[in-house]
Image 1 (cartoon, one colour):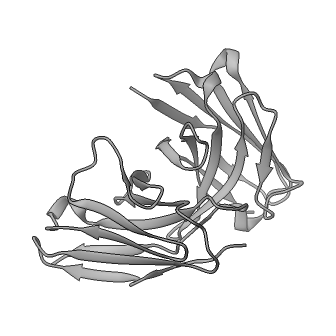
Image 2 (cartoon, rainbow over the protein chains, first blue to last red):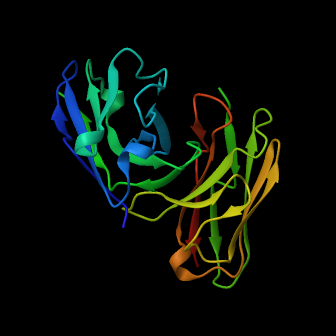
Amino acid sequence: EVQLVESGGGLVQPGGSLRLSCAASGFTFSSYSMNWVRQAPGKGLEWVSYISSSSSTIYYADSVKGRFTISRDNAKNSLYLQMNSLRAEDTAVYYCARADPNGLNFDYWGQGTLVTVSS
Amino acid sequence: EIVLTQSPDFQSVTPKEKVTITCRASQSIGSSLHWYQQKPDQSPKLLIKYASQSISGVPSRFSGSGSGTDFTLTINSLEAEDAATYYCHQSSSLPWTFGQGTKVEIK
């Protein structure tokens, strides 16, 4: 069974940093591209970042470019999102989502971790 | 950026009724359109991929159609468990974007 478990969320002050993790199991993690998708409270879904299976290709939404860094450790079956210079508008539930074999949709999602940016 | 506009924003439906949700793209995206279901306090779940391809384990009452700029998600014979918000998503070009969501309530 595919499982994605996020962790690392919490309350952080504006300008602060946070590192999210996503532990994957139930599939060959090193063979799949991965994504982070976020959802502000009561709002819709927003794609944040993508990383290919070998980390050779990385994309970011303009809203986080230059502040967030996606990475992965295939030996540890883990996905990460380093978030710096956090703003109030980054407050959201952050989901890790597996990309399907074509890399173009999100076929499995974690339960999410809440990041709150507030003073 | 490709904008996806869903209609309606909200729909209140009686069980066994047919539900139709549309998603219109601001430019042609071929068949690179996917549908997700998000129930309250749950993470999204992939329902339909590439406009009309079914997903293993998803009930057959869910179907998708369309190409280019106009797409439709159909729920035949709505069941109480289908109460959720439905999102379309395009993967034709970066940044990948989602529609604003359609909330389906059971009367």
